[in-house]
Image (cartoon, rainbow over all chains, first blue to last red; front, side):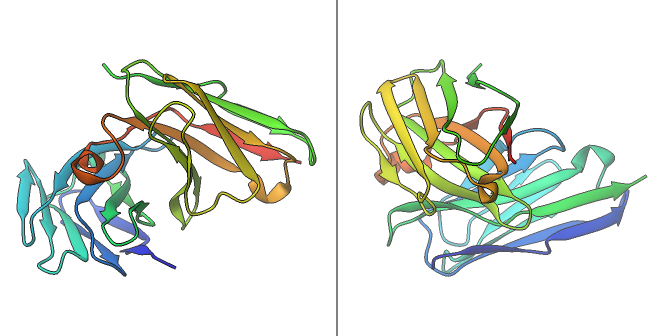
Length: 111
Length: 118
């Protein structure tokens, strides 16, 4: 079936190190949204990318949407303890008309 | 602020029981969604609704049904709960119609209901 996989599933980093999570879809997506879920919390919207090859930045976070619109990445520069949580990508599959979430990457930042 | 509320944070039920999970949003959103979240599997869509009395199956609708009698309320029903339905259930809402440009609207999530079926 249609899937959106994220790697890695877990990542532990020292505070100040960089972090990247990758999102890969088996089908073309109309858009990519990124959400963050703090431990014990619910997913909260971070950003959306729509155009092929698009890059957006939010302070220390950089988001990219692949040229083929089948993959995306989230890069955090100089992680802080407040970055702890699970990061999900999600997108709308224009082929199957379904909104799909990725499997998530759980980030732990060690002080 | 958009607010999505769910009827319970924690729920324990027995196998075979009928279970109702309620979700209410206060922002007049057209779209409402039910997901279940399991470790390593992310969020999987159970059902969604883009209008009152309208519903569409998601990826894992088996064993579930939904009801949307009013715009602000979307209920998830487990007709006969089973142990493999033990999970975190998340409700979400978003403005606009599902599909087309409105699918680009962000989803607002409720706090979740952790359901345990014994």
